[in-house]
Image (cartoon, rainbow, N blue to C red; front, side, top):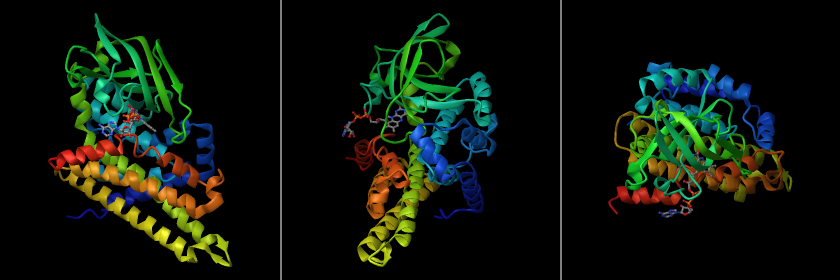
Length: 380
Ligand SMILES: Cc1cc2nc3c(=O)[nH]c(=O)nc-3n(C[C@H](O)[C@H](O)[C@H](O)COP(=O)(O)OP(=O)(O)OC[C@H]3O[C@@H](n4cnc5c(N)ncnc54)[C@H](O)[C@@H]3O)c2cc1C
């Protein structure tokens, strides 16, 4: 087993570090967090740098990179803000679903535009009444001639409001079937008549933004159905391992930023005549943070490696998502302690890492749900 970085991955890491340095300077990222915006020029720069292409199948103008390569890029681009990585991951999830299941017409029309940054993708599954129990969703899509007509409400849709965004939407097409069997996926432009999108006022993850989306008799042509009617749940679950590895990589970048900032601060900040990092109490906090981070790094890398080798990794992907998200909360909480009062101001990034981190054990399947899945894999 060898999951040390190869030459290609080292190059990707260096290229992404250079991208971040150029396009995501700390002062700008702080301002975007306060304003709640992911500037279009950063998104355009991601397209130009080829980052959007990584997770799009090669047949449609993308690269179709191995997950271990994607994880390297996601980790680095999550360091200034985990929201940049989430934006990329959303493109990846959407593109994989379209690449595998959408009609040839939709794939050739949409995916090259995704690569060029002309279309964004977001994912709307969660509703006010269905979070962990996602398959009990109630948003309805009924067939009407050559169209579908959609009514309902989605909640906590990341980045759904962005300009030129298309929503991969899960809706119920057969209300009489068992709950998993009556769901279909649709590709829905976010600016159609009947769609209302409101930004939620949220604690963290403010750059990408979180939305509620209302569908009031929204009419879309039949061709926007992804794959077969009522097969949506099967499509959603198809890429779960990949999604969980990508989430772990995102959180790893967020955690690394917190650990590195804390170590730097502890070397610079002096109290009682010496750097606070020279006090054993602080030094041991930093040692714990670095150890936790290292464990998360190896779990993410080894799971990505397993996935790329075609080995089974349902359990490992759940474990990586579970461990790295909880590790992220631990290290950002400790990072707040190391920075003292400075951590509590908007002049330092630690408060943002900590606020953004809090979602990690909630979004993408909560820690309780991950533990349940791991227990199931253990035969319990
Ligand atoms: C920042 C952020 C971004 C998000 N982005 C998206 C997105 O882009 N698209 C999208 O569709 N959704 C998104 N979500 C929604 C996210 O996936 C849900 O919040 C998550 O699945 C949990 O659902 P819930 O919030 O309704 O909590 P609930 O399901 O109501 O859970 C509440 C608590 O009960 C626990 N619980 C529930 N069921 C069980 C059980 N069976 N066993 C043990 N414990 C249980 C949970 O673990 C949790 O602690 C996002 C959420 C956040 C916060």
